[in-house]
Length: 388
Figure 1 (cartoon, rainbow, N blue to C red):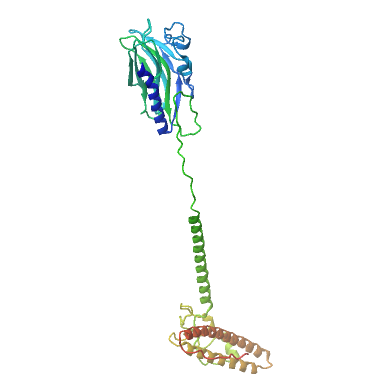
Figure 2 (tube, helix red, strand yellow; figure 1 turned 120 degrees about the horizontal axis):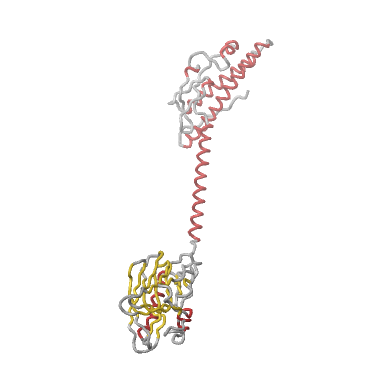
């Protein structure tokens, strides 16, 4: 009987190992109370031959022979199979990955069958058998694991214990224990006599890389600021280029026309020739790195792209001087006639607009000459505008 007394310790070790490795929970199905979590009770067949050992008065192995404190919850089921009669069966359902069945195992008692021969089925498949031949001592071993299976799928199962054969056979069923996977930490754990261990894997505290985060943040801000600065610089440069005159006007001696001719053709109208709109050059000398053309409403011909900046400035000065002379002449030639005065004033406004445009072109040309002087080219000529 020493062999059977060591089995509970071995079974407890197996349960602990599986439980700890799988981080699972053990639940108990008592012979009387049933599943302590789901409430499902075992079924006993055939009816009328099974006895509750704790309260059995006709059993040879009853409360007076059994230490109730060593049975699970002080109960067990007792039945004896006789050849030629119906098989003894116990049915229990559960959901889990492992199952363990525990019996009371008895030695020799007077006029009592203590031989055991029980076959086990899971989901209608035979999975094991327990056989016990009693020794000469009238003692009892408790919580003996008569069947165990730790390779089940985590699904619903039906366990059947069956006593059959050509010999009389005793069943003293105490309880079933099964292992269930419980991903939910709030799942209830059943009370079980076997030692259970729950291993909690403690993760090391996460140290946030403050320096790396701060460096990445600062780097991102600096990079963004650099991009913004570059965009602003490019926009300002583009506006500056757009604000400069894109062409230089070709100078020449203007043809002085009467007020009647100017009124007939418009203030900015000129006869065909070097100063007519038809002689405009489509592209002039650009400022800011791109070609452009002056608006055709000015009526000026653009200088040849190969002419130097100094020559262009001289032509502008000559043109401005000629126009200022023409303005002074117009002012001196005004008469009391109101009609002529109106034409003359219109002509003066046109000439003044032309002078203003030429001065704008001259300012742009000066900027170009300053850049050329910085590169070691010819010095800038001096010019003092005649104030009207």
